[in-house]
Length: 161
Length: 265
Image (tube, rainbow over all chains, first blue to last red; front, top):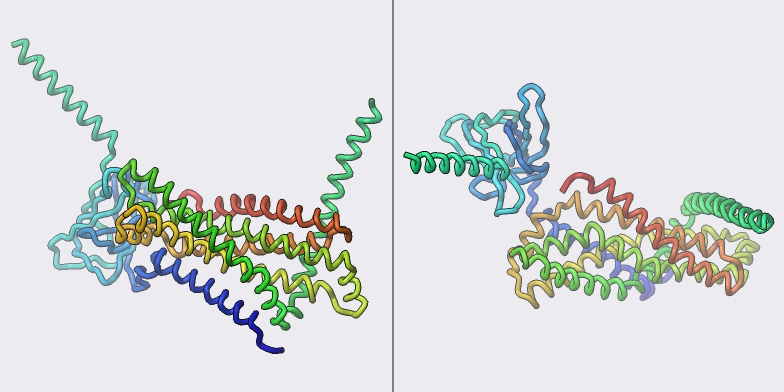
């Protein structure tokens, strides 16, 4: 069997195809920024997680430090157990504060970690004690209307006096 | 009157039995191709020859269509997203729609009409001119010599073509959104990288293209092999290849999508 120009073209084609896959993986996908380094998991229980989803980012000071790996509902405490895996390059004090935040007005929800001042660090399997639930828009509007209504009541009473 | 009804029912029954028959024959043919691929995999030169005809010669149409699909996505995505002030998400939209759906599906449809029809016509004509029968006379198995190399060449080419389609499409979206319209380049790429997950989006897309590659080439080689050995039969088989494989691609895409992208985002 002899080498022919056809072989060359097929070789170019295969290399171009694999190259395209690599471009997709590194330039378009997150494989370039993805670090395969070790991570540790911590749990946080939230009263209400709003629209938080699995794979949502965990950020501290705006930097992505981990991902949400699982969300479960606990029938013992009737709240949501959010399990997140955090890159082991980033260590947090034991009294770290976790809250569910929204990026932008209609953006996706993520977990924000605010470091506390404890000397001891969070270890794998630990539970974050201080959490802050997601803001639910309906509850906020309800509270606002309630406040407005009671304000109005106060005013009417003042007028009557 | 009742006689006409009886004839009608008989016609329906005949068609049903005939299509079940064909399905069984096609399954047996597919199995036989698999069993006899061993010999053609050992003679890899045959497969390389067919990769040239199915893959390399499909490059032009795949690349040009990918570029234009990406550019249109960029244009339309920008048109819609800028109403919500989210025009920097156009990269995310282009990349996700290409990687998850449009890349695999459109590339497979083009592949079916460019390469699938050619495979069917070639094998059908070989049958019509009794080349396959001649091979059998010379104790050369036409399935191992003609069918299996074409099948494997299609299975190899399809994922590569779809990857090229998606990559060129993303580049087309970049051209329109960043170069032409002026969306910020940094946020275009960073939002895209933030949203596209390697395992979830890219690997699933590649799995899709592999399934489409198997489906399209299996249909193409079978239709060619099963064609009536006349000019009319070959043309009918070519048409059936394009129609059946397009329907198979769209149906399989729905099934695969519902398995892969269910309830997560």
